[in-house]
Length: 288
Image (cartoon, rainbow, N blue to C red; front, side, top):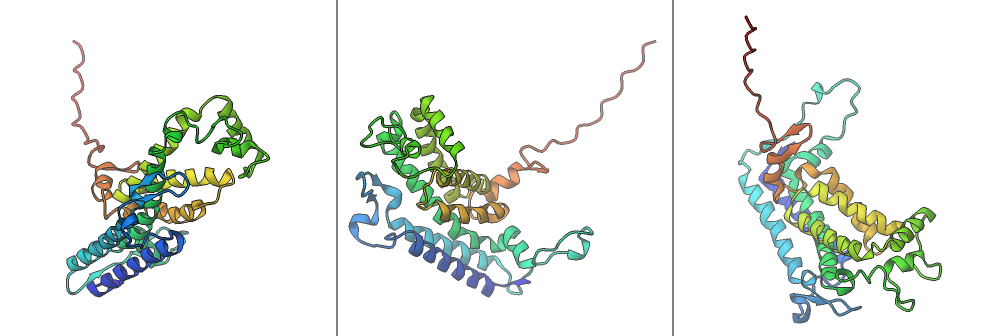
């Protein structure tokens, strides 16, 4: 496969279309240019202002995708770049993946494809986290989880109550939630959820250790779905799986361009953690 400037432009256009489709299908109202929602939106349930829900960010992120794609295309020489794998050198018994799939998961020239997924998932998490950080029911006492009010129960109380919805998928999960209620964990666990959602969102948007961030995002989605809550969790879970698979290049247009070479991996340490082989020390001379 030869990556040319034309192909890079086409890939950028495809990425932009994917971004628009994601926000059009799964995030209603985020393309509005009305003044009252341009820079922030109020949550309809509690009236809390969420800055990251401002529709201006939809267009800012779209512009970043286009800028990144065009910039990468301009760096490609006129004759193009030959992208290929030495399949003949693979070990016997190895099952070959399609070359395009290997390139998509591990080649920086195709990394712009992952920007729409990253931006969509990251913004969803950041908006959810920001909302909770601004909500005293999450940050002061954890009443969002355990309110103590039967007329307005918290999330955990609704899970364990047979009269309330949602209901957990498994009995053991119900018992686990009940255990956390009995131990009084709501006060700190609510803060953990709010901060965790915010950090996942920031990491994905900034492209910082996106594989790890997406993993923790799917872990939260997994638990929310076990609790019987659908909402955006199935969509975010499914899209995050692809980010995890493409962790090597999904954050290339972000901090991972610098973080991954510095930190490396457990099987190939980076510049910061790599240990230089020391010089052999002379053996002590035997005593006379």
